[in-house]
Image (cartoon, rainbow, N blue to C red; front, top):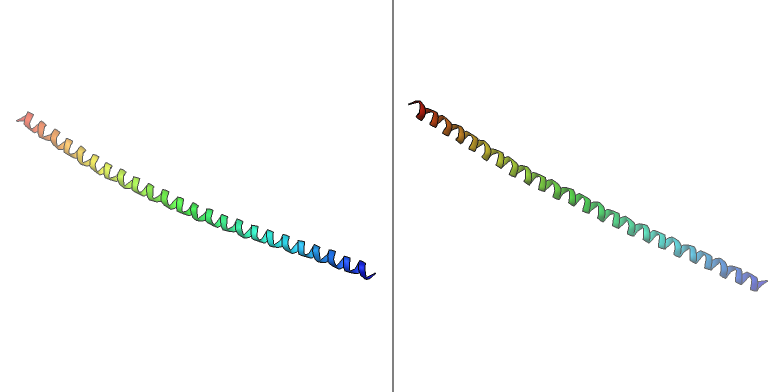
Length: 89
């Protein structure tokens, strides 16, 4: 009987060790997955910030172009008035 008892204890111990190893492996995989997910979220945030910055830059350039176009239009209008005055004199 004692041989069967020793074999049973060894088998149970091996099963417990296998369960602990499996649980540790799953825990490590979950932690690694969480770290990868966290990195991906940080990368996503950085990407959105970069796009926002690019959009602001494009908007500033467009605003500057619009100001220049307005000044050119005003200048053209002034030239037209000046020519009209010359023609009416």
